[in-house]
Length: 443
Image (cartoon, helix red, strand yellow):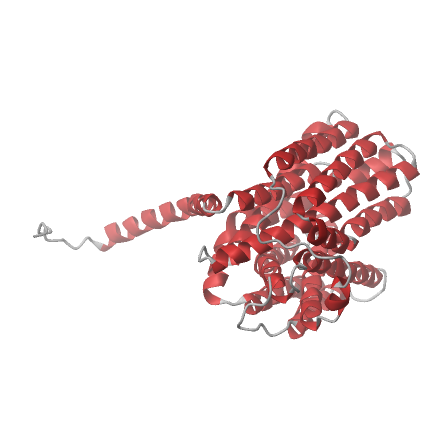
């Protein structure tokens, strides 16, 4: 027999409300800690290979973002490059990375993950070392191309294997594949947050020290993967390079997904194109940009996994992408609606902050869903090729779209027009999204 409970007395309303307030405040304070613990539990439940690949993404971004944020300033002041040449160098880096992802993915399908990742790490070490000592324009361009091509090798290899392992885990009853891909996103964002802190700390010495530190991070990654990454990953078949691209360009459903993902990336790229212009107008300087970037990173690190789990319980992959694209559209619409008022100061920064929050929430829905969808659309043995193509095709969309956005900024149109145009693009992308089949395609 259970012990009888003592009779309960009804507390007065003041005590009850005070207790509830105290309980609510404690719950609110404990919520970020619970999210972190939940993420750690999910991470510990993964296979050793998945844990290695997720930590790889963290290390990649720490090394890369320790250098990248300070590159333009170094090229313009220390080396004395003209503005157009600085822009060309940065564009070449993006092209050699995003544009060649499809090459790295195809090589991973043909030769396996390990040799492609190791080769990419070697090239990144050489590129950072070269950049640290480069003074002539041709040397800087060569180093930057090498740095970009290195990422075009290892990133699609790692991303495609994470996606494949996530699908295998889901089919074995280990949980939704989006949980794994959300952790992958969190690791990348944490690296993008920590990298600039490391770079800023070392920049007090000089830019060469920053580059050598970035190279040092990749030396550690290279050593760790040479030791821990399996020679051959079970279940990953190797295919011939020939014939994969022909099937890809005929895969209309996949190309539609690329277009929708490209619309998201174009919106995300405005953090570096439209947002600085708006912040400069509202605040008189770009100093608040750092806080807005920190806000975006903090949101992803703390809320990505809870948002992904919420979406997995209620939405399929297509609906998750639809919701994310509509949130991104709403972010642009907020600034477009407020822009005619011409607010400045703190009030003027509120629409920009709203854009950052809505864009980041949209990113948290779109990015894991898109990566999780690729295995369902990829041909047998071509997951690396398709993962790389997702970045390459969407990167081309961003290149064209960013040029068009810059042209809008140079016209005499009302300042709200670029924001309105970019609000329409994600809505249009929703129409392009393919209907998701209920059965799972080849992985």
